Length: 472
Image 1 (cartoon, rainbow, N blue to C red):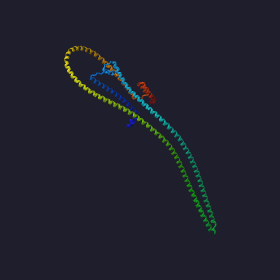
Image 2 (cartoon, one colour):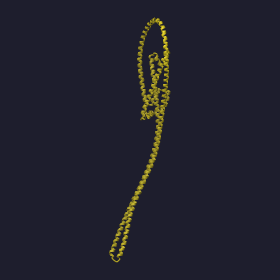
Image 3 (cartoon, rainbow, N blue to C red):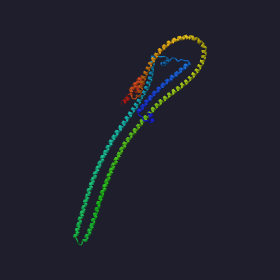
Image 4 (cartoon, one colour):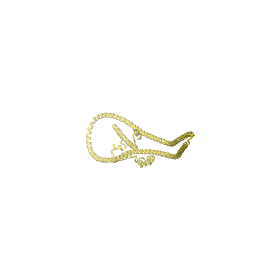
């Protein structure tokens, strides 16, 4: 059924498969019934033709031993007719029981195959659950280890950063103190120079003698020297500021390099962790793919088995049809030969009739002589006929009453049989929803004890699991 749905590219579910299976069972039962009725009809037709052929030849058929043939050729009593109707109904019921047996067996075999498939799936699911639980446990343990390492790494890096910040703050404080000292020294030097200049100006004002030129020269020399020293000091202060700025830039570069290294280490460790987890997940996915492939192979083998069974059943059905056609051809040949014989027999009979006419013309005289004797005998026969006619009328009344009773009995038995058939068809349609215990009890009523013992041994395990599923 699944193979047919897949070939037609139709979406299907378990209910669609079950409906198709039930329709297939109904069609199979109808085919068997039609085939049985057709065989019965062909057999009766051939017997009728054979009898007509034998009667034309002058051969009388012996009285049949079966009660069915006695009903046609011999007048039966009322009790015999009732018994015959019951036998016919029992035979039809047996045929219907055979179909129900076959349907119950097929349903039990289907449940057994479902049970085996369900057990295999349970085992595979249990193994998969165990594998995934083990992988999850391992992954959780490794994640805990990795998270602990990351925490330790973060703590160490935070401690290192705090120490670096403390050192940088202390270095900045030292640099600021050093700048303050330099500014104080510069202010002191400027004040000293100003005091010296005042003193020199005072000396110049007091000393106005011959050594004025010498003093002026010396003063100019000293002043030039002082200017040079002041320029030099000014240059040194600018270099100190430049050095300070360069040191700050170097410190910032080092901090940036440290932060970049921390980020790189963190990214490398995270990348390694993700690679490890990804490799494990890839392994798990590969195992799952292998498992899915194995499941698909199992399903493919199952489909092949179902197709092989269906093809065997189809071949057997075709072979049986071919045999029936061959038999029909043989019977047609026989029928043609019988018709040829009948034509020959008719030609012979025509010749015999000619001879009979001649004999009749000769025996007509004897017939006239016998007419007088026959008249007397006819009068006697008429008296007997009147008596017989009265007897026949009484018998006909009895026969009519018996026929009415038989019709009523036939209608009642037919209604019962139809009800039983409807109940059986309903049970066959609802076989899937009935419990396996009920099915086995039904088989026990229909099957022999020896055959039922073999079947019950085979399907005892189905009762336990399928009933649980139906309860669920």
